[in-house]
Amino acid sequence: MVWLGRAAAAAAAAAAGSSSSEAEETGETESLFWQYRFKEGAQAGKILGPLTSVMMDKWMAAGRVKKEGVVEVRQTTAEGEPIDGMWREVMSVDFKKRQMMTDAVQEAEEEEEDLMSDLKKGTAKLTDDIVLNKLQQERTGGAPRTTM
Image 1 (cartoon, rainbow, N blue to C red):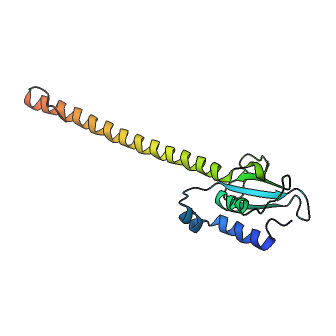
Image 2: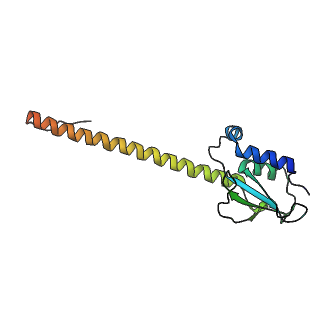
Image 3: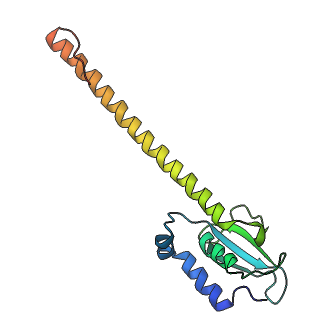
């Protein structure tokens, strides 16, 4: 069984390194990457990739791996540096779900950054209003002005 030929692996790895068109097609902003290796056969032990979760999901959906225990994967950076070094049986990984979880975390982090930015702007405006109110009091000797 051949899961991915050498030429296809090289092309896919190159595409994974510059996956802007793939990211545009899928709406991904930041992809998970994976390396894979065969556990048996002529390419046993050879580490290939990295490939995106989207590509891995497409290959699994196309039935490129037909039996368990033949291929293992591990999560990596786009440059192929292992993240946790843990090899997993390829059929046990839900690539689409992992990508969705990563996207959800990224969206939450972006939302948190936006909220913090809004909070800082609001705090700055409030501080400005307090200072202006104090200056107004000093100039007029009167009651504080109200702001809304």
